[in-house]
Amino acid sequence: MTAEQWVLHVDLDQFIAAVEILRRPELRGIAVVVGGDGDPTKRGVVSTASYEARAFGVHSGVPLRTAAKRLPDAVFLPVDKDAYDAASTDVMAALRSFGHPVDVLGWDEAFIGVATDDPEALAREMQDRVREATSLECSVGIGQNTLQAKLATQFGKPAGVFRITYETWFDTFGDKPTDALWGIGKRLSQRLADVGITTVKELAAADPEPLIAPFGPSTAPWLVSLGNGHGSRTITGEPYVARGKSREITFQTNLDHWDEVRHQLALLSRRVVEDVAAEGREVVRVTVKVRFAPFFTSTHGKKLEEPTLDPALIEQAALAALDRFEDRRPVRLIGIRTELVPG
Image (cartoon, rainbow, N blue to C red; front, side):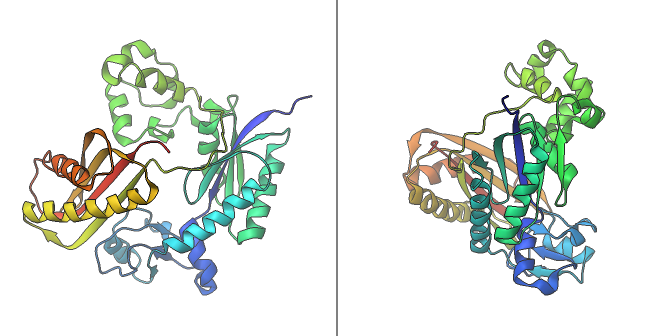
């Protein structure tokens, strides 16, 4: 008899903070915030925070200064990318040791395709092996596709296991707002509300035809499919390849003059081109992010006429995207992201 196919979503618990706590065991059980160079008096945002800090509203993306106001006694640490890269590599090696295909989503999460009659037991074995190899804890979501598995993980945290299937889908998500679904953010959720769809079960019951006008011929049926709990069942096991490279810089003093913004973006563009050139993959699109004071963020993109690694053309595209910003308020952050030819 053939074992049933499942998708497991493994998500490391408070990953960056957990890596730091392993190096500093005395920090266990207290509020730890990781971000920037570790100085909360400077501008920057939280990369991650321990569960003790999250209980006070300090989480990823919160300005470091805000975090310091909410938790003045927290321990603030600088970001150490090399340490997180190494820990992630060990975690993914432990997951691959089971012999199932693993699709890595980033430092701290992966999808695994398995055939088993007891996915919970396998999930706990994976948790044990990750813990033995790295001393890190993870949560595992189980589903009949990637959407269900990804969403199930949140119910298992921390260090637990949770399963969602088509049979339990509406009991679990039917009454939740549409932005509870992976792939639907606040803006898209608001657009759905504008056409009278506020819950997952309302989205699932919607007729895709009337949604084509406001959302498009591809997005409309995809949204209804999400509402019904559908997702991919294919886990390839192919190596993770980043879709793009990005950099950003937060200025400790606002840039008041647009000429200086252009100059800083040109410098940042050259640094991103160096990152891209190291991979040898050409750029097809450039997106520029600007965060105005006090904290309003906007983006504009520019598609290149053809794939290129020419620094001058990429810089030119970045500046062209910047010219699309009509606002000229003081700037506190700029960022650039390059979309690359698939590897």
